[in-house]
Structures are given as C-alpha cells and as structure tokens.
Length: 170
Image 1 (cartoon, helix red, strand yellow):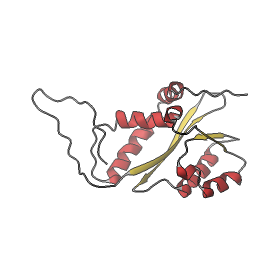
Image 2: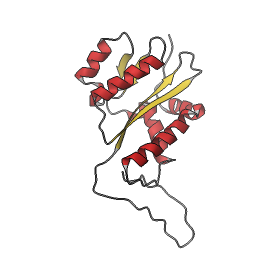
Image 3: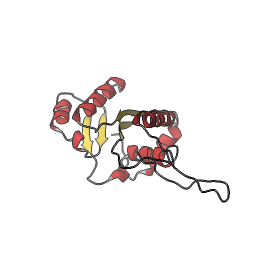
Image 4: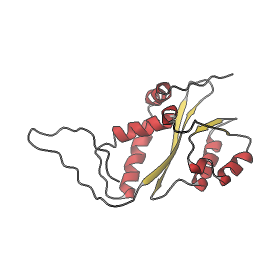
C-alpha cells in the first residue's frame, strides 16, 4: 500500500514527508468495466473493490453476472488476458450465457484498454501521494474517487478517445 509518489508543493525550506509502512503485502484489487451504449451517447463505469484479495474466476463471474443484470440486450466484452478471465470456470460461465460475447485484447497491450486509463488517472491524480495504513481506509478512499469518476462522462469519454483502438457499429 505504498503511495504512488508524485511531485507536490510545500513551503520553501520544508520538505514534504510521506509516512508509510513497508515490508507488507496488503492490497486492494479492483475489477471494472467501461460500458458504451450502442448509440455512443452514454457511458457507464462499473467497478468492484476486493480488499486483501486476488481477482480470481469467482469474483469475475459474479461481476459479469451483475453486469449482465445492469446491461439490457446483447453486449460485447473486451478484456485483457488476466488468468481469471481465461480460467475454466469463467469460460464455462460465458459458454452457458448467450452474451456477453468475449473478445481479448492482444497480449501485452494495456494501451488498448480504456479501463487502464481510468486506473492510471485515479492513481496519478486523486490517489497520488496518499499513504493509507489499512486496506479498509484505502478501499473507502478509492471507492469515493472511483464514484466521482463515474459522474464525469467527459473524462470517461477521454479514456476511450485516447486509446488507439476504435469500434464500429455494423
């Protein structure tokens, strides 16, 4: 839970100090989706936080099931090649449902994934220089800022425009 350190401001002659604990392996894992309506007029950002847990097949399936209840009609799922996305349980879940239609990004291509831009924005802006000592506090802060991001459609749209991949409706 070491903070991502960015340049900061302090009074002249007073070096800013970030206090943190080291040598621990606690974290908050996140799963998210940036959804674009077929008419390209609406964007939605969905996310789930998992304090002190890894993203495995069961949380992925639960997230997809919840997302399926939120999204009407057929939908396309573009995602990276995380092991949990390619796990046997996940592929069985997807095979048992008519949609989403899964498509993988090419290997090692985070620049194509707009959700990566969302996490990069959160880490480099509101969460930068933020030292939290427990996962609960970090989860609450991350949730607050991610919810703020949900209410900024122009910023979400910029994540889509920034990546070199485009989608056409046929």
